[in-house]
Image (cartoon, rainbow, N blue to C red):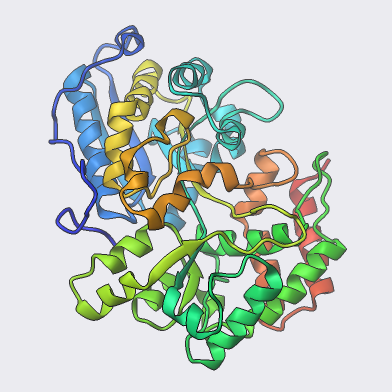
Length: 434
């Protein structure tokens, strides 16, 4: 559900379309090819102003450089297949703002972005370590992508329902969380977490579940290690937690929990900041009342001993088949420079949190204390393929929903925890062949 310009309460929401913007010295030296044009593909909006301001910044780039840019928007489940077609055919968009792992699946098809990434980092307080990990080709200092933002996955919950269940605050531990969810179900206000093949929410919940118990898909040497006692415990806990959920979560996609919380059908889930604002700013009085009751908290911490929420990351790449590599790099620089980026960050209400440390002082994070938790998304997040590398195998395992389907099979009663972990191990080994 989107947020309209009228509804957004945060200032600085928009840049007049086509408005000229100053060029940084490095940008002026970009040697943009004569007659350059670009095609860009990125995920469709989840927040109204995300797309609007992205388009406005793109128009400003065109006015400043003369480079015509066409931006296409793909559905979330469609973006990865379209990226694969582009990579495998050597045709299509010049720039793809893809999902987190995708540049590592197709790294040999991408142009080197090291000079751009290092310059952005040097001038803007440096990259968060996880952003740097997502940007660099495995075990090298070569940047193959520019991480553009991360949508965090803390718990979103109804404060009144949590208090009615006998809790003064949202539980920080797994035992307390299970007790809360059982009580919420008894009171008719169940929890709901996505267990379908949802790019954002399914991966967020299932990876958190495994990681917080101390499980992981591969170890530091990229050896498959998902079939472990920690994973078995995670799956047992996940089955117990699932029994408190609203019916239907096995088929939930990324929009499903949004609809359920908006309708008052559930009282706790995981989501980006968009859900809070879409409910809070609703023109429907009943829905807006739910918004006043919402708050956020880090997901409970288990044996791992630290927050382990994944983040839904958008990661921009430029393909070698582009006829205009300098224009592509100039475009990415322009979109990431502070003045342009902050308009997008602020207008999107912090939905895509900043990957550069210097941008953490954006006024968006002090505009509403209930969303400040999203500012530190890059600090809390673990990565796809944790504890190993972000590489082609990690990206493919994530794209094939190996962890999600492992958890879902246990919750559905189709497999025991032991059987599901063994099947996940078998599937992962197909990609981690070494």
